Image 1 (cartoon, rainbow, N blue to C red):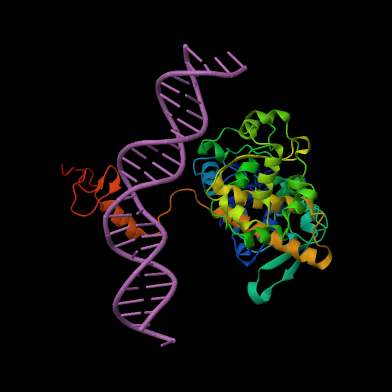
Image 2: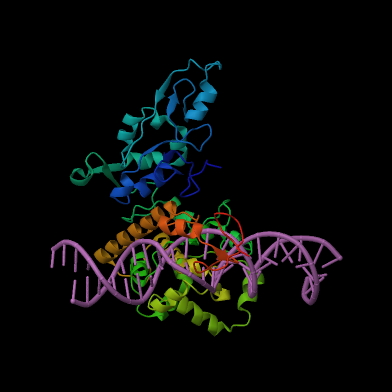
Length: 396
DNA sequence: CGACGTATACTAACCACAGCGATAC
DNA sequence: CCGTATCGCTGTGGTTAGTATACGT
């Protein structure tokens, strides 16, 4: 609908990131674009308050609304009574400007009711600017000092809404449905957003990445389960008993011990091989111990499952703060920052990923496009063919 | 409500070979 | 360090068999 933040799905979106083609609330904009130097260079502007989907180019002073080009033409065309409204151009911004800087860019920004409603006003007000002139020039890095929009006192610049985005339901379509999997049973994982987050076709799939995302190394998979298993990784989310209709059928033949074993194999950071195997072997279902189940994976494709676990785990760790077995103190803080950066990089990558087929070698495509075939298969040069892409004729 | 049959949708494998990248000299 | 030669592997698209799912009876 283009109204809620594409990132957290909770707050009203206010700014449009052209680089990400995403609508973000101020809180998420700050957390996302403070992640690294590249993201700080993203050009953002306000969102059209009329269509709520396009970047606003002008601000109508009389109607007090920001408008994209289309809505501006529609509302202020020469044939409309509002054609003489005073409008001012809205500038794009980069980096992570403070409230004062934003207000200097957009003199009206602090008057926007959505800021006040979203509770981000305080967040803006509590921002401080750390100049990073050496590498960033005028762009600045925001440090958040207990901003209301952020959770806890962690140094991780992850908004509360960011955390919930990984576990909250969303109205967006479930990509798994397009892969021939049954729709998620209501109550299972409490929403499709989790599945959306799970689909990571380009996620770097190696154990280093796992550790990077989790920010820790589990030397023994049993550690994971002795500390609450997946429940502790993913946080408490109720799963209705009814979900066993589909999931149960997938695992009915397996004993509970077998389930635990497969879970350990699947989620053990110590088992790089098992992680890699997910890439090619579909894992129809995970279900943690039913009575204590905090989460249930259903129909996770092999293509994405490893990254899925990585993502969910990383996100959940962020959501929950430090894991009970994790390090503390300075080291923990450092790892938290690493996890935060990893998740941010993941988000960045996820935003830019493309599902459509991508041709990496045009020369090979050109060759394939003129190659003769038999029943779709390439044939040796000179052999009889039944399909010629160039002439659409048959040789016999 | 489950079993069964049919229709529809989706996926992976197959093929030849130019060209890419690694390696050796 | 640079250029050249050699070798193994990768990726390209249309078709089809196999599999999964949806739907009606």
